[in-house]
Image 1 (cartoon, rainbow, N blue to C red):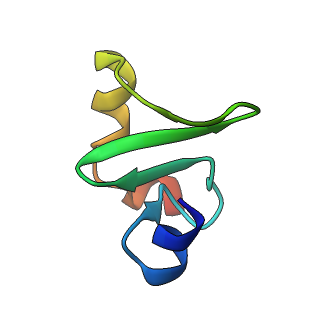
Image 2 (cartoon, rainbow, N blue to C red):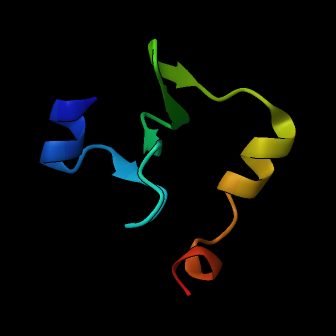
Length: 56
């Protein structure tokens, strides 16, 4: 994921929330074990909303 972030292939949720990353049509969460793919429908609904409210 580090390479994807460095090249712009992956993007964090916001400049402040960097533990959630969108890459390859999926959201990923950084954990102590590494990157985990998010598959919870409720969390995905929040992550897929326009990010303007996060940046404000």
